[in-house]
Image (cartoon, rainbow, N blue to C red):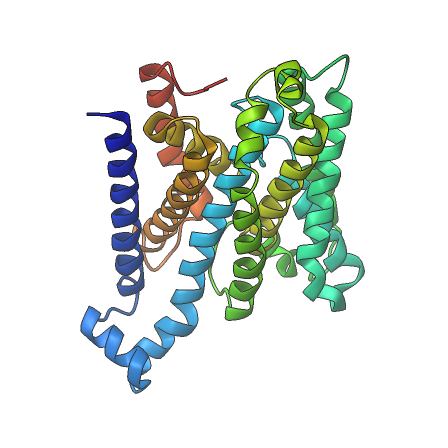
Length: 330
C-alpha cells in the first residue's frame, strides 16, 4: 500500500467512525429513539423525546467533538513549538493555568462568568510563558521543558484546589471548569467552543508550514528564511487558545493532546498539512467515544470522559510506542 493510499484510507476510516459514533451517541441513553424518529422530530418539533435529546444530548455531543479537536490540534502545535513529542496542554500546565484563571474569575467576580473563556486564555498563556521562559538556558532543552511544565502544572492545580476548598457554594459552581463530565451543558456553551475552537483550528491550517520548519534545527529554519521566534510565538498563541477554550467549556483532559498526535504521525506522517486535520478528526472521535461510553457503561450513573480516555489511551499509546519507530518525527 502506498503512503498516499494509506493517508486517504486513514481519513476515510476516521470520518466514517466519527459519523457512526455521532449518530450512536445521539440515539443512545436514558431516552432512545430510532433514526427516523430523530430526524422527524428535529424537522417537525412534535416529539417530546427528541426535544429533550436536542436540548440535553446534542450540546454535550458537539462540545465533546470540538473539545477533542481543539485539544488534539493544540497538542500537535505545542509539540512543533517545543520539538518535543511529550508536549501536551495538560502535561506542561496550559490546561491547569486556564482552569485556575477561570476559577479565580468565578471566585472573585462571579457576575463576569461570560468572560471565562478570555480569562482561561490568559491563564493558559501565562502558564506557557512560564514554562518557555524558565526552560530557556542557552537554548531549549526538551527534558527540562517537560519537567518545568510538570512543576507549573502542579502549581496551578494546587492553587485551583486551594480556591475550591475555600468554602461556600464555590466548589459546586466551579465543577464545570474543573471536571471533564459533560453533563448539563447548554447551547450557550456550544456557541463559545464552536466560535473560539473553530477560529483556532482554522488559524492552525495557516501555520502548518511553520510547524514543518520548526521540526528542523533553528539554524536550518533561519537559513530558509523563517523567523523562528515569531513562528513559535504565533503557533503557541493558537495552541493556548485551543487548549484554554476546551478547558473552560469541557473541563480538564490531560491526555488527548499527547495521544492523538502520536496516532496521527503513525497513520498519516509528519507533514502538518495532513497531520493537523487528521488530529482534529481523531481527537473529536476520541472524546465523543469516551463520553458516550461513560454515559452507557454503568447507566444511569456516569463515568467522566477523562477517565475513559485514560483507560483507552494509556495502553494504546504504549502499544504504538513499542510497535513504531516513526512516531516522533523529530
